[in-house]
Length: 276
Image (cartoon, rainbow, N blue to C red; front, side, top):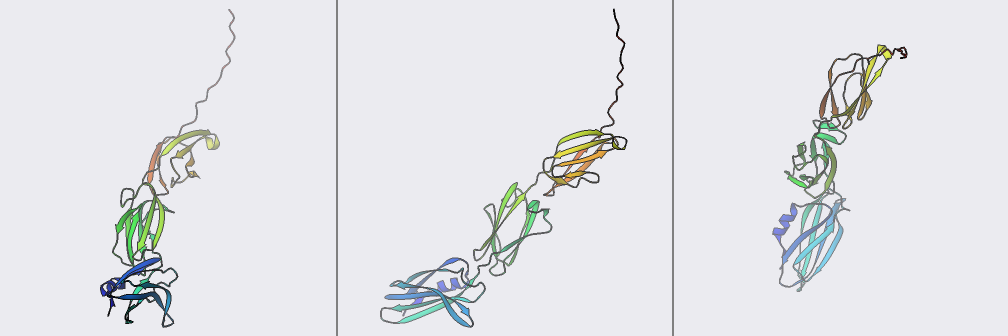
């Protein structure tokens, strides 16, 4: 009598699958007649067929099933029934694990930056059913240990395939499900690109200084008002001061400025006309 290749069966028992998957099965039979391969799930204590395929006069069964309609983390099996030309019948079955649930990726609190823009970012990776298999940063693969929890730490330009600007992170579990996250990495410190002064008479006279920055900043300190790339503050003295500021990614910068004093006032005299 014939039998399904047990070596192949042992390989399949470890399967964690999602989407459309092919099981490559073989049997040993000199005169094969037909075979039927089906995928089943345990529903209310009974095995229920979801799909099946017939094979004629062959010892090789490349059984392909779409598992998206199946329930994740429910007992699932591949069942094979075969017949030879003499009318003998045999069969086998083996369990597989269906995982159609995508892994998750979460930004860790120690990341520097916020709202998708970082100078240095770390992530917690999680997949409860089949484990986290690998992560890709802009297509560069980092293989992981197939555990439920994993990490991607210290991502910054030049590390793990990361670049300045937009980066695409793809997390993949053992079953092949993926989750994609796009972030922006910014390791460039903000700069002052323009400084302007306006003398105002308010409060006995003051110098209103407006700074324009290379990118939106915050954290200039008390007295500054504005938003984004333009900030203004009025100074009542001429003392040189250094201010600090930070961009959305957490990069800090500093700038030294000196307020102007009161403009020089000139008295215009009318000179007599001299006739020669």
